Picture 1 (cartoon, rainbow, N blue to C red):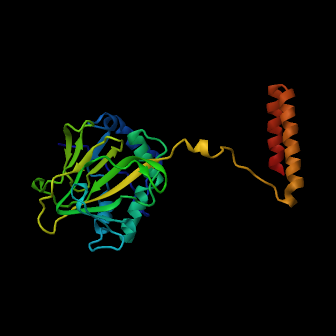
Picture 2 (picture 1 turned 180 degrees about the horizontal axis):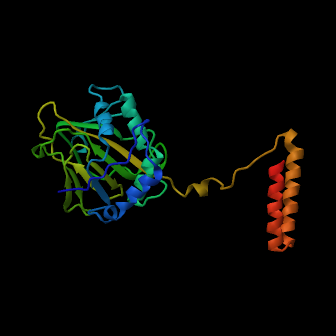
Picture 3 (picture 1 turned 90 degrees about the horizontal axis):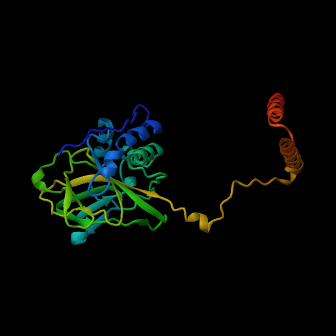
Length: 291
């Protein structure tokens, strides 16, 4: 199956830079296809990272075991799988992960998905680099939905595959199953620089459940990030109010004068014809600018 080629407009002349407005517009162009995809909202994009940025991701993948590695040997729930935290990678890879958690990236994802006010996960809970070796698998599942540490709702998964060579006979396809778990409706091969973004609902079933048939020494690699939203319920827990300013003792006379002037001006507004009040306001601004 063919997928659209969409490369993030990242400027690499001085670090990793992407204009938020341009990123938002690019995502919005893809929104209809994302929302209408089956079995649940998702998109698959080819050539996602510019070549130099992709090279950063590949070169930053740690070869040896790291102290903070997560290792999964739980059978269907994850077998021969290794999770590597970004801080265990080199500087260029760390910069890439920070970029993928940045405002321009959030703008792209908000435009793509229609989910507003997305938040990144600075702790990379479950995220980072992923590596699964021969015989490994990840059973079909729906992901956890609440970040236990940050108390946020998980909304999106983003996966970028980092396999420079991949043979279809090795299996390892990402499977997307119908919400009733009766039909596998999409199978995505983990080809280099292919990106998958999908919603994380209670029944967005996915995984790569067939044991990998890779040659010895060849692993299925990717990087993964997850995105969240906060809850409006915070307003029931914390009183909502504007910023509160308080005067130091030495500031009290000046603050009181400003308060008295504001009250006088509000009184003038209530009793003055609108046109005259606007003229007086402009005169007040000009006088203030001369001080």
